[in-house]
Image 1 (cartoon, one colour):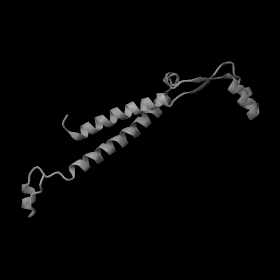
Image 2 (cartoon, helix red, strand yellow):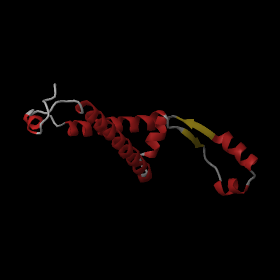
Image 3 (cartoon, one colour):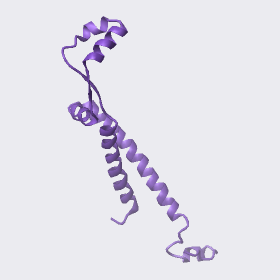
Image 4 (cartoon, one colour):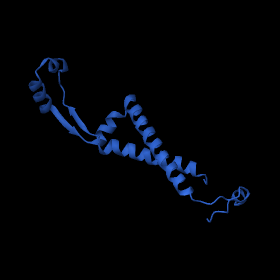
Length: 124
C-alpha cells in the first residue's frame, strides 16, 4: 500500500469509525421509564404533573445500555452511518491537505523538466 491516497482513505475510514462508535457509547445514555406509564394520560396532564410522574419512574441508563437498546432500530444505524461518512470525509480532506502541504516543496523526480523550461533544477 504505497499510494498515499489509499492510506489517507483507510486512515480516515478507520479513525472515523472508532470516533463515531466511541462517541455514541461515551456520550450516549439517557433514561428509561418503569412501566406502567399511560402516555395518553401523561399527555393530558399539566407540565408539572407530567414531569413529576416521569421523574419518579425514570431510571438512568449508561451509554452502553443505550447503544445496545438502539441497535434494533434502523434509524439509529442510518444516523450512525451519516455521522461516520461526515467524519471520514473530513478526515480524508485533512489527510489530503496534509499530503499536499508535505509535497509542495518537494523537487520533481525529473529535474530535466525544469531545465527544459529554462529554470534551474530545484534543490530537494
